[in-house]
Image 1 (cartoon, rainbow, N blue to C red):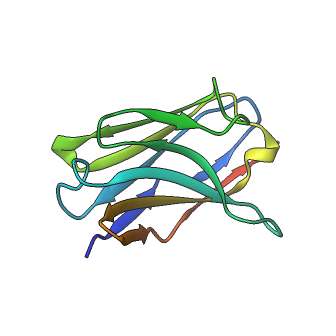
Image 2 (tube, helix red, strand yellow; image 1 turned 90 degrees about the horizontal axis):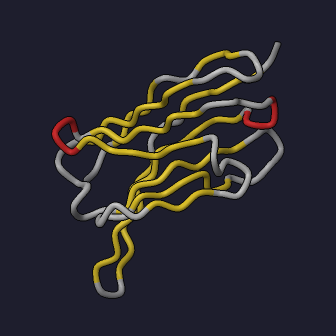
Length: 119
């Protein structure tokens, strides 16, 4: 079973930056598509960014040009660099690992890390 542990959240002023990290239990990047999702109070969880096993990335329109997803296979760690943060980026951010094997989909979530953008 894959375990994911996020870190790096906190309070930041509008226009500031944060880097989130997600430590995975083992070498999973060659087998799992990794992603970051977020959930704001009273809203549904939404996709922020994903990176496939081949390294292709995808971003929500709301974060394109501001956020960058990356990974370090040697450290088994996924990152989300967040720049030019806005109050509407305030949410709990979750790390996600997804793998499809035949008809079975495996999905794992981290516990989440709070990001608050406020002056």
